[in-house]
Structures are given as structure tokens and as C-alpha cells.
Image 1 (cartoon, one colour):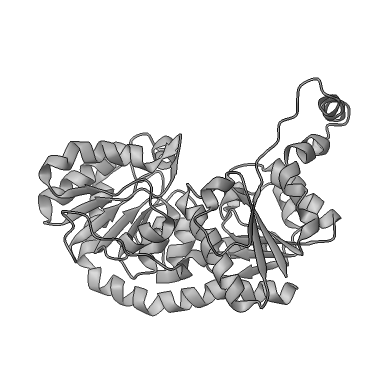
Image 2 (image 1 turned 180 degrees about the horizontal axis):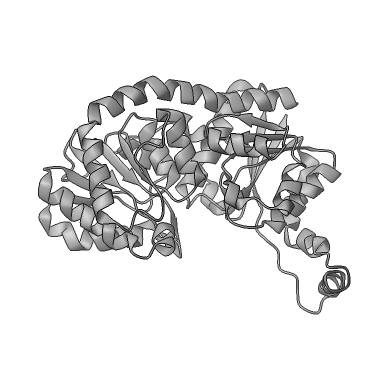
Length: 385
């Protein structure tokens, strides 16, 4: 079976790297002779993933102004309100690879949480027009994200794999019969343990991840997290390891975390992890933390999968759904509107401290089942073939 993953922005988002890396591994473990290829917006960033059989340039192409293609696309759009010709040109790099594979996996995870996605809709349409299998791999979608256009696109898929029960239930309620429940593949990802940095307290270091994406959505959240850091330093003896997980220009966790580090470095109890580690290396550090507080979903998955008690600065259905599937409740997940309130952050932090042993116990019981659910995705994929 030849499989192409697409709708991937590149591995400077270590969560995207984690999805690709873990998916390729579990597919190859369970499907004999599977070949896994990746179409990427930034293929040079994905060379760290050795399990892939090939990495394609899936970046968007420009339509040169006043060229014949530009004129045809403009006329079709203006006269017929039809953008398919233009989108086919823009997504040519990915579309040109469809003929070479058997199955196409749309792997963005939460790609469908961010408004309409006409480019991917067109790729999906072209995949089905060529008679290939189309799979939405490990997705999260909120009720608020749905539209008639999106629903029409989702009906094209041969298989939709929802990575948590909230998305699964919502899609079933929308009448989609092609939906199965799994878990995020990154729960199964390996880790690499690099040497611990100076100042790390073994058994008494907690991680904090914060993102510009959350800050953009709630402008007061950065100040609330700053106050939480101050509180932790004043009321505990723990070291704080500031942990970036997405390092794109314009959406760089490291930049906002460095501002926290610069304010607190003289305490000797704050560490800033580097901005050039891979997903498995970040996971290796997170695995050795006592607690973790994170805004990036796959940073929190790295913690959960190592049974590290975790508080989530959530902003979408994925955070709530993943926590619910682990704890049978949305445990220690704060919504986007809550994280500007430092008292709420501090209260949840104290709850995590109080319930440390119980949280570890639940995680040790739940995580093996969650990992089995990750492998379920491959079983469903295998049945499709």
C-alpha cells in the first residue's frame, strides 16, 4: 500500500512532526510493505523523520499575473464563481502526486478548526476524481467549526478518524457514516533523552509551554501566565523549564517564553529549553518533568503519555476531548476565555499539586488504553484497503 500524507505545514511545528513521525511508524508496524510519503509545505524541515519513504514539495504555486492560466482562472472565478481551476494550479505540487499512491491521508489534525479550507477541499475532490482512497487522519473539529461547505467536503472521505470522543459524537450527529474513533498517533511516539540542563531538579522540575496563538486569542493571557510563574516560584521550590513546541516565524513559542525567562533568570530556578530540538527530544525532557502546563496540544500529549500530571491552556475541542477520554471529564483544561484570570490558573495549579498522586494513578490506568486506540486508526486504514 502506497500512502501519501498531505495538509502538513512542516515540522517546525513539533506537533505536526509528532503526527507524521508516529503515524509513519505505527502504519509500517501494522501494514506489511506499506510505503509512506509526505507532501509538505516546508519539506526541508521534515528531513528529521527517517521513517518516511519520500518527502515531496507540497508547497503552493504562484499563478503569474496576466499569464494564460491567470486569465482562465480569473474568468472562471468571475463568470462562474468557480475557483477550482485556480486552486488546482495553486495546489499542483500535491495534486500531481495523487496518481502515484493508493491512499491519501489528510493529517492536519485540527486543520478543520480554522474556517473554510478551499485548497484542501479541491485536493480532496481531485483525489476522489482519480479513484483513490481519502482519509481524514486523527482529526478534531468543533461544532462551531462546521459549515455546509465543510460538511459537503467531509462526505467525500472514505474514512474519518476522530482522535477524541467529542469530535466523534459531533460528526456522527451530523449524519456522517464514515467516522471511526481513535486516539492521536503521537501518544505512541518514542522519545530521546538528552542530558539535563544545569539547574534541572530531578523529580522536581515542572514544564510550562505558552504560545503566541493563545496570546493572540486572549490578549490578557500572557500576563496571567506571568503571574502564575511568579506564584510557583514564591510558593514552591520547583524549577520551571520553559518549553517551546512550535518555532515558526510569526508563531514562535520560544520568543514569548524567552520574555518570561529574561524576567526570572536571576532566580536560578528557571530554564529555557532550546528552540532547535525535535519532537522526540522535547518529549524526552517533558517525560522527566514532575508537572506540565501547556498550550500546545502535542506538548501536553507528550506529558500525558509519560503519566506526567498536566494542566492544559486549551483553546479548542481537541484539548477538552483528549482530557475527557483520559479522565472521563475535562480535567484541568482551561478554556480560552478563562486563561486571562490568574486566580483561575493558580487555583487549577494548586488542584494539580493536591491531586498529584491521583492524577498519576489515573494516567497509568488510561494511557495504555489510549495508545491502543492510536493503533486502532491503522486497523481501520488496513480494512479500507
